[in-house]
Image (tube, rainbow, N blue to C red; front, side):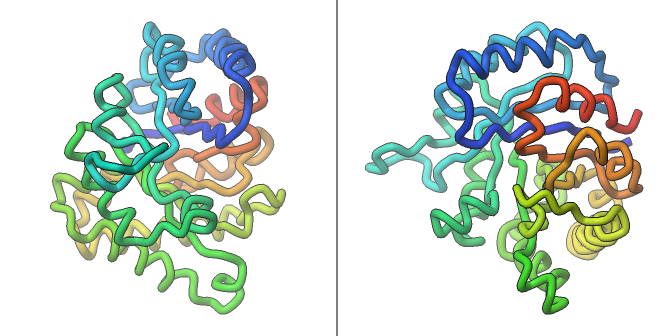
Length: 254
């Protein structure tokens, strides 16, 4: 079975103390994950060491950075490299989130470089893709995500691709309260897997976890995760509510 993943993206939210309390609450629920399940907390940079300490004794619980720079090092004041993340034991990193693309102008080419930096530093990239509302309304969503995958992932070998997690973000459903129907989610996830199959082979495509990232909540997680090609979720707002995220973790396929 592919890894089933509940990934929390805190974005730019919570103080250090609030984040510590939140992790204590979630980990205090003592949800035992199977070997095929992962929970990942993508926390702000200042909280990475705290997060690592919190999950140190927990099996299959990990922390992730929310971003990294696309260059190895250099005069990039305020930026953080994949090499730096690796040096403090961070093993996962969100790459190409829609907010990075929209607000900071990140391109598919830069995202490809970030993927490379992560893999070179033994970090699993959590690659985000997805379409805005106007693209969906024009019926161009399949072509749009295919271009994102082609320009950011197709330079990888099949073996490297197995070390990448994909998160599909219908941008029109992020923070809006709207959620893709289970049919829409499954349709897009199956499309993404078919793209991977064409480029890397079916065996590789079947091993890549594809998460849904659009307003996942406790009341819709089990239905979404029940789709054959949906392998968990990248969760925003609901991951900041301990009781809610605990239920989302519990909704993962076993």
